[in-house]
Length: 413
Image 1: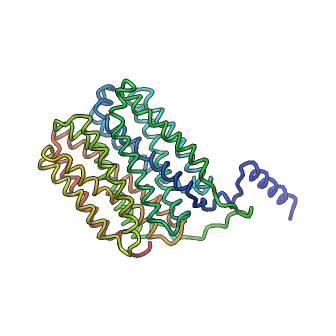
Image 2: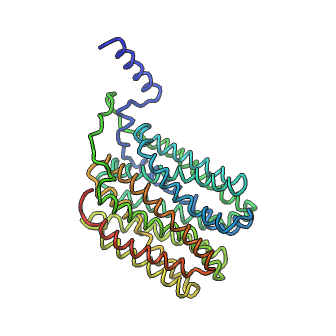
Image 3: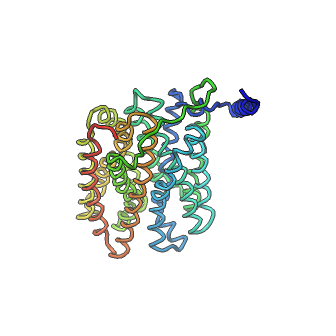
């Protein structure tokens, strides 16, 4: 070994000693302990309150800032746009820093964004929301990879825990933000309070997420793989993920305002938005362990989407006649989300492919989904009613059913 090689190796050992991680161990799978399950659940619980907390007080935010209908539509679309753009960086962060550090960084960025968006006017609100959503995007991509790598024999069960926690976080954010306005004297304190939850999750994650120890050698060079962009099934899965995201973020961004415009109180509308998310908790424990252990998920996807379609028809025909029923049906339909994550893991053979497909499906998928809240709001602003917006949403669900049926068939990308 030459003097230069000796010096290079000595530098690597010094860096490994300072960080506590060698190149190999930093890129190894996280140890699948019960503490890691808790960390995954708490991280997931923070991936939706940034969206639902703002949605539940959207009217007050708009009025207080003197914002336009266009600004409001942009605000509802910003999270999904950022989810798509920032998701591209997630695999790079995971490879460079290791999954534990990358997800920890994501939670720190999320916390900073939640604080930033309450300190000033409309443009700072948009900027802070974008920063918070960037942190969420990294978690969106990398947490499913943790599930596949660290719990290979319990993908369905841990996916259920992950999506149940995600739904719980979204529901709690929607339900508790309006009452918190009275406690903090306005929407800023109520919305900003969720930074405490993400900061707490960061602490738990740093304590519980540990890579398996390695032998100190450098990680093996990745095998040459065909790009996901050249695989037709990867595009089908991406389209399915994007369409279900479109439906979910329209519901989280606009359902509360729709009900308020129909004469329902702001508090009840917030509870309905919370119920949509909370319904996902028991369904996330029940559906993924069953559906993801079967060869095909096509029937489950189409059946759940049919509940969403029924709810949208009800909202278009008689929104105030049975709002709680439409809410429950839409909540059941949105339980298709864990299957969207599940097919990403099931349609790939190895974790590297899972990371690539997760980044592609969520990167492009959330960009597809971002158009939903924006167009839904713009159509309402132009027409003055919700009918055209709901017709558009119904058409999206029909296409979701067809594409989801194909994505759910048993084969690999």
